[in-house]
Image 1 (cartoon, rainbow, N blue to C red):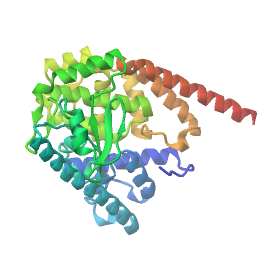
Image 2 (image 1 turned 30 degrees about the horizontal axis):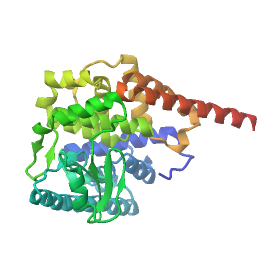
Image 3 (image 1 turned 180 degrees about the horizontal axis):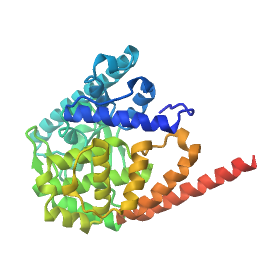
Length: 364
């Protein structure tokens, strides 16, 4: 994201508030309530909404505004064209997925869809939820799937094979999660033990049972945060809408015990709070209430005002880097055991590098 380093933090906070209101409008079908439209930096708002994975939702919200409150025509054109690319990509992915399901059915295989298009179904307009690629698991037919779908170059990781199928990037998972630690292996084992309870959708693909899917989504989100140190808004929206759609399963004793067993209840609780703040909804029935009140206040201020992305202009301005580092250290106690040590190491290493840069800058 190319953001002008002269951008001020108060402007960023204002832009976040506009993004939240536009996204809420798009999701809940209510006209966005934006008080001071003339002060909005629409170019920057578009850049930030792309970074957070909500650009098409923001555009849907803009379209609900009266013409007098909408951005200038050139901005609307850019928004509309970019949103159209997201909608077109979704339609292409959906078409390719149908073709893959057909091939699986012809070859006595089942396709389990992971995140992506499956989560988009929880949105009022699924095509506005951007999907980077199609992730799937073939119930033990990993090698067979590669032979059927990998017509061109293929690359491998310990977790999946990556290639393009009919111009759509796909990932055929050997395992659903990273399995390089004992705790992650245990969670992978749990997910595999639930495969017989997978739910077949009307379109022909399968998804994990609701509780197993929640465990998978939390592990995926935590992994993303630990390795990138970023928390795009889309992930919280995904989780909040998923929980609302599966509430009769999420509120059960089985779900709560499963999250506690795999040390996911604390990060789940925090992510639910963030989803509430962003969407302005009530998810109180789903909480464990295990986040310290002081931490909640700290997290809310930082996420709502600054967002948790690596904006280049906040590294030194008003000490926000150190606020961000402080935020990470507070976050540490809520990271599950499966990623706790690595997260602590990464956070400490970033702090050391920042101190070095500060010392060098002072010497110069």
